[in-house]
Image (cartoon, rainbow, N blue to C red; front, side, top):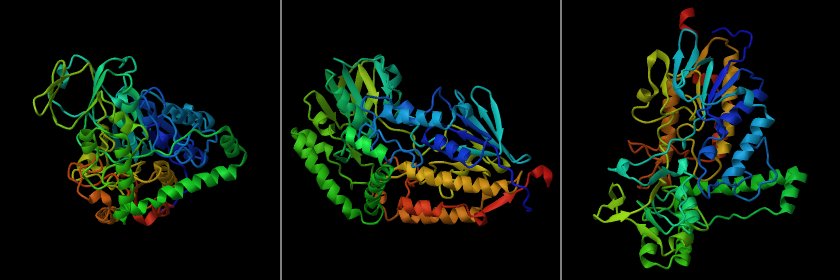
Length: 494
C-alpha cells in the first residue's frame, strides 16, 4: 500500500466516563478535530454519574484516580467521594472544551463496519445515524447492573431497586430493608443506611475479604502544598503508584504474600464483630485476592449491629411482601436493594457490533472475549476499545491503564493517517499469540485459585484482569507496531 499525504481520520467515541473524556482530550491535544462523543444519558460521568448511593466513594487514592495530565490539588480527602470525582470530570469537560463534541441522549444500538467506504456506521436507539473513520468504545465494564433472576421478583409490592439506580425518593428511615449482595457497593451503602432502618436483612452468598481503608480528610496545609509545590504533588502521586504497584507481585506471582492481608482482615473482623454467628460467616473460605478485596472502616461495625440480620441461606423466591429463603422462612420487608454488581464480562453489550464480512462481535467472542492488548480485535478494522478484555486491575488505578491505551490508540491513528481511506486491522496470529500469553500468565495468579468471581465468564475463563504490572502494560502499549496490523483499502476501490 502506498503512503499518501497524512489525513487525520474522523472519530466517534461511545461513552463519557473517564475513558471517553480522557481519550477525547488526548485526541484534541494531538490535533484530531473531527471527534464526536455519544452519551446514552443526559450528563457525563459514566459510573460516577450513575452510582449515587449513600457512601459512594473510590477505593483508589484520589491523586492516582485522576488524569496525570490534569492534576487536582484540592482533593478533600485521600479517597475521593462520588460527587467530588464527578465534579472533577465536569471540570475536565469545561477546561478542554469537550461539550461541543458531546451529543447526549444518544444510546448506541448498532455499529457496523462499511467495507466499501472503510467507515463505521453507528445507529442510536433514537434513530440517529453517524459515520466516522474510527470507532472508539469507552463503555466501561461496570455500567450494566446485574439483577439475579429470582422467581417472583416482579410480584413484590414494596420498593425495589439496584444500588447503581438508587431511588433517592425513597426514605429508608424506620423501614424493614433487605439488601441482596455483599460486594463493593454494599460495603459502602450498608453502613450508611443501617443506623436509619428498623431492621436490615443482609443476604450474603459469599463473604468478602475486607481491609481497613487508610482514609482521612486532607488538611488545608496539605492542599496548599499540593497547589504551590507541583513537584510535591507529582512525588506524592508517584509514591502512591509504586506502593500500589508492589501489590501486583502478590496477586500474580507470590500469592502467599496475600496471607498477611488475610490475617489483618481476620483481626479487624474479630475486633468489631462480637456475634459468634456473624463472625463465623463473614470470614471467607477462599484464598484472599481470588475475588475483589474490599476496603472499609465501617463495614464490620455495621455487621455487628443487633438489628442487622446476616442471612447466608439462599433465596428461594420473592413474593408480594418479602423474601423466602431456601429453608422456607418468609421474611417480610418494605424494600429490597440489590447490591449484586454488574455484567462485567459482557463487553460492549447491548450494542450490536458488526465487523468486516458481516461478522457479529458476539459470534467472534462465542468462546470468550479477547482482544490484542485489550484494544483491537481481528475482523473489526478501525475499532479500538478502552478498558477492554484483560485490562482490569486488582492492585492499582485503572486510569493508569486508560492513559496507556490513549497513547496506543493515538499512535495507531497516526499510522492510519498516513494511509487516507484505509482501515487497519490486527492480524489474527498476533492476536492469538498475545491472548495465549495472557491466559497462560493468569494460570499462575491468585484469580485461578478456585473461587467463582465476576472476573470469570460463563466458560470459566478470566476475561477481565491484567496478569502483570501496569508499567509492563504501559511499555507494551508505548506505540503501535504496524507489523501487527494489515491495512485494507476500501472494497469499492479494489
